[in-house]
Image (cartoon, rainbow, N blue to C red; front, side, top):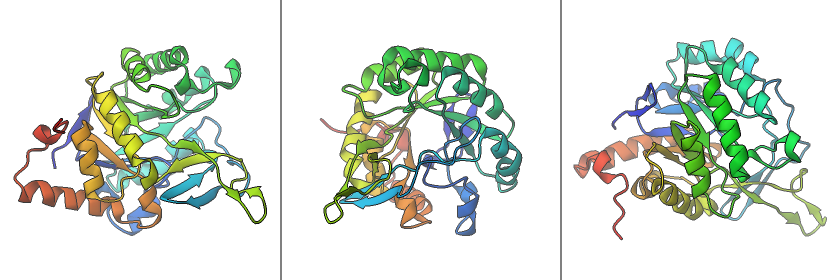
Length: 299
């Protein structure tokens, strides 16, 4: 499969793994050489680290799962010092996913992660801006512009902005992020959901609500990728409910230049490698050129 260029970085192929579903990447290297993947978007990193939300934090649903882990992580500096050297040793293509609760935190994270061995930065803008009443950066166009501009000015690393689906129309956010300096867009993040145990009458998630992922959200993800590809010209990384290579093909046909594999990693640690190999086989056996296939949906 052809490599993918984002900014000044080149990724070996178009199958990556989604943040929050693959740890820091090292855990999965026991199952297969993760350097084989196009990129590893590591567990979301914050400035000081986080213990996450109270239990329970995961609940199964029809066609997917709810999670409210709370972005538990070791912090950007610990990641750079403890995890990154080992990721470099195994040859992984590292995408550092990060978040903040203020513009200043986003900027400091980006600076700390702008080091050798990290191929690109992926901003999670689904987080609340504590200085603006808790409104998520990804649900207000002006805040999206402000935070992306600030991070763009703070780093020369390729910048991927991960968009939230919890908006009425995702297109203005995509256009705004690109205008503010994004080299690429990734979507979709999880949809906000809730589940209740009818026996105990208690919510199944300690945080009350959680992020819905898995096969149930794939139609939403494919639709939003198609919409975003129609209004931007940067590489779009599609994700949401990809369980096999045929799911990935839908995202490519909708216009995605690459895909990130997420929730299925919890049920099969080798799923991302299988999807990559199946895609390579499919394109080879059918003599299909990937560049001509991308965005090739017939309407």
